[in-house]
Image (cartoon, rainbow, N blue to C red; front, side, top):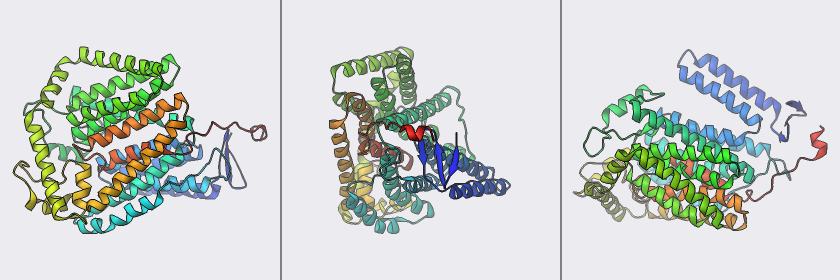
Length: 482
């Protein structure tokens, strides 16, 4: 039963301490925006209604669901529709609400700040000049700093606060696995029928100007809402390890069947992307996951799940597997990619401290004098997140970025060392996601693509949170009877 008392919202087993007046005014404003903007653009009305829905979710303390919705908005509204910063703004708003809702000493509404704040401050400060230098267009100005730089800090922090214990971490992973499965199904529908669900006019124009066919044939590589099949492949390779970790962690036979089904959809959808980097990242994640499982029984579960899913895929889709192997062994692919990296290295040699500026249009223009012959066409980025940061923002920024990743991974290691065996499988699944993204970022711009980076930072923050090791709180009898 929901009731208000002295400005606090009470929910069974939860207390959310945000002033009632603030929430009421927020809902009213959102509804008014929906009514007014509906006549201008139906999308604005949909966003406003979605804001009301999100506020209701927050009032009900479903923070994991709220974070998943924010990632979905970041992907579809910001990336696919091109609105740039809606998801980041929502993440900042949710983090602010969680800060206002904190209750000192409460296990349900704990607050935690990221460790190594000086590293984050250095990262935020060092990237200001490259952002100004590279912001040739408004799109470039909104692309990097609000999403890749500041957005990384906010979403990482949000993940730390949401993962209040292993129960909330499990809930977050379940929701993210479902999100990944839905996008895998979206890719499979596109591959099977050629129909792009929830298409927009902007996307149709973009897709009409691009050609993602396999080896010069008429076989279309599937990019889904990410547009580019390599980005879609990276996403699917990452998300594969969430149901895998949940499969090992659960003791329910029905849930294990569900997680096997989710992995099956993701692997088949990954095949439809024909992404070499996606498969390399998936194999790297598998090795990390197996290493961090710990007990031999869990390794047996993992081996069973992977073999079962792999056999189903091999038997059901032999032609796609053969095409993927042919694509992976094509020497032209590696030649083009290494040429792109060589161009970025030459840019870094010319501008080692400040880079040429954070901006896709800026890189397209200013990297051209340094382009090597193996890179046959001008490109807006070097298809490598680490070289991208080094070439656009300078080596100091790249070093700080790598230091942030390593420091967060060290926190994950500390959590893993102290966790029980079931929680270790969840942490291993999350860690495999990060390793898969990091390995993929060598061949594409994974950590520097806003929707992929947001997913990575949220998961990394959740598994690095010092709150994870707290036990599920037992509700006091006095509060149960209130």
